[in-house]
Image 1: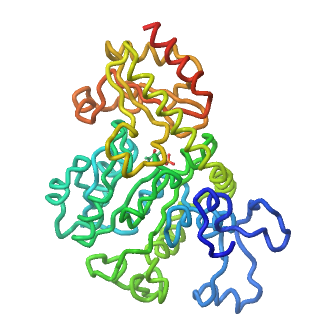
Image 2 (image 1 turned 90 degrees about the vertical axis):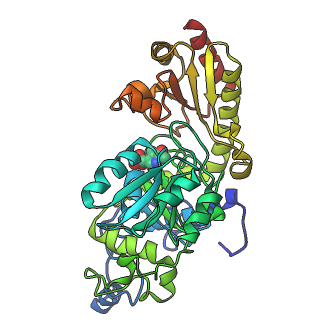
Length: 424
Ligand SMILES: *Cc1c(COP(=O)(O)O)cnc(C)c1O
């Protein structure tokens, strides 16, 4: 592809790929291989010494994943990207590619459940403390930052309240304290929102959701904007010689690669020595998803808004949240607010469960971002380990139902909800 500035729909279909030079295959081939042959012992030696770039072993790199990574970087406006085995792995290896024992992170408190548990229960076991602050409470963020802080972590649209993060505000604070701003943008794929344009330094995706788009594979990615200076000595992992890599100092010794020191370290330390590799078959599924991403996020957004507006008017419904109703969506989500809707039914948990059990068309499932419409009652499932008091503190009243609106005809989706609501 030429350097011409193509639109996002075009990049989603073409970026990072030319037809395979040996077979001229138009689609991206799935390279099911564990390792790659060296042309000679010298070639092997040059690859290992980083004198030449190329494929060595598929734990670190694979040509199918290479297309996925280049395409994601192009879509997000980043300089490099890495695909990992899951969104959860992308988050864990991003944090541990920046912070080590004794370091701290400041994070919003409205995170995806699995991320919250990783930050609240797992990272502290490894000596990394996470200070949670209410989303968009910038005074609390400032107060939580100290000399040990190494990053600020947010989600573009939080769970389950569907609040919209004021990314610009976070970026100002991150810049002031010279901290990388990490943004999980899973709920807002790059056809809807590109956090790097708002000052993010690293963008994370669970590819398992809208990017894959059909509920068929688990994967994650992190996109490096290449806009963060890692030479500040407080980032020890980038400034101290790395024992695992010939004493390399990642912020200093990579030449032009210093710009993407984060991505290079994640590949040469994270993927190489800790191993959260994505399978090439899954990478292919995500590439297939990206080709229709723009069409799908437009339709998810259209259907999501229609369902949210229908629920607002329904007499059995107490309240509705949709990211598109948030005033911040005008700035951050002008092209659509995607398909997540939460609402409360009048009555409470019993009524909510009755509705979930009787609604047609929807699948009861702990997932989001499928072509199929999905429904769940979080208080009795995903968040059932919390006490009712903690559930309410987490913005999760017992009557709350979460919907991930799919790509079906919107009249069918609304009809199914209307019938079920009228039964309770
Ligand atoms: C699903 C999800 C994750 C975790 O991703 P997996 O691919 O399931 O590991 C992280 N963040 C958000 C916002 C998610 O929705």
